[in-house]
Length: 113
Length: 84
Image (cartoon, rainbow over all chains, first blue to last red; front, side):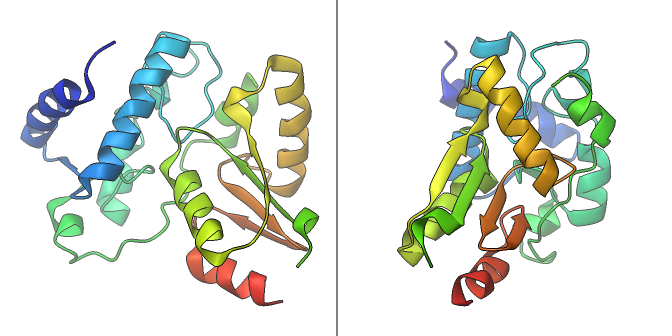
């Protein structure tokens, strides 16, 4: 199993280049990354830790982290659904931390459960 | 509030679910917690039916306090509901 620290460093650099930053709360980030690694072990893909996997990679490809909803959520709320990836402004407290509602269509959530 | 009046439907890997658990623990209330991702297929299907009735989006955490349904980690709403 990949080391969380290694995954953290790898993703941090790659995602920062795209303008997405890890939440400054490193403890929470590590918990989420552990969830991602666990999901990869359980399902074979890094399914979003805050969503229930259908255990079908093709069906769940929209919620393989980073999910397709991240862009819109970070744009609107400054954070992805999990508070894993955030904008710089969010980390600096310029955007209030609020509940990010589920953007994934309910048909996708329930379709294969 | 009676123990059976608080029920949390959660995912073991979800940060908002963990925050909710931590907060409920801080509040010192007893609650029942179901970690849906850890359930086997049949049991999971039955629990999901329950969740769907409470929260049609079937997202987590879904928390029931008495007759209040709280979707997502919302501290103030939880505090409010615990007062009643």
